[in-house]
Length: 252
Ligand SMILES: NC(=O)c1ccc[n+]([C@@H]2O[C@H](COP(=O)([O-])OP(=O)(O)OC[C@H]3O[C@@H](n4cnc5c(N)ncnc54)[C@H](OP(=O)(O)O)[C@@H]3O)[C@@H](O)[C@H]2O)c1
Image 1: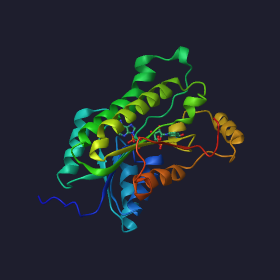
Image 2: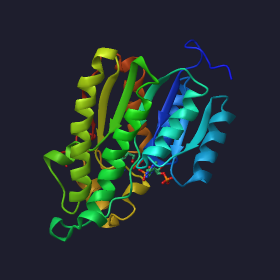
Image 3: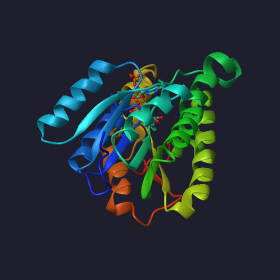
């Protein structure tokens, strides 16, 4: 099989892109001219519908199933990409599992904390190791995490905060170790975004957040995707090892 050359369309792989911020980013990256690999774990129907919508716009995308917590599954995903493309220009590690509100004293490591660490941290490690050979110089790797919460941590989010804190540390380590290859690693830290991730979060908590917010509402997935896309493309060419906070001026 003939591989597409470096001059062919740019490529982008987004983990957990069947819905929410990942799906919004996929639409924007496709609109920016990238061939987008829409990774998902179980939700084939949503991933396939997203691909159809992108193609109807005359843009380019395909769905690709892999569980980021499973090293072998991630390896197979990047093998399938590398069979047809010589390089990957942008990698966005976005996959996450829903938040389950729980006080720290009630947290169980295996039930509550480990699954968050696995998808966020082990997931990123698996993805970055398997993608390394394919990543082009001058690539952007963007990791999503929630920075504002570190400064003013809300209650009942200990498992998620632990995972995102570890992910932030790993992202900075990757930024340092890959910089000599010209691979840039930046993180985007939104505050609350209106997606299914918050499905277990009480409606009242969302309302209070919105009431207290300077803009009176949560962010939309597309508002975060706009920032991810900007820093993954030309606007981010001089950003490296940076964290961009997307919180609408909120202090929570
Ligand atoms: N929403 C917020 O308030 C908020 C705030 C700050 C940061 N963030 C971060 O932004 C990112 C996107 O969040 P979101 O709100 O858009 O989430 P979401 O709507 O719940 O979407 C999560 C995505 O991750 C996928 N996924 C879950 N486990 C996976 C696995 N093991 N392997 C591959 N894919 C997997 C899901 O696919 P399947 O359905 O196929 O499992 C889904 O596509 C996350 O990193 C999140 O922590 C979100």
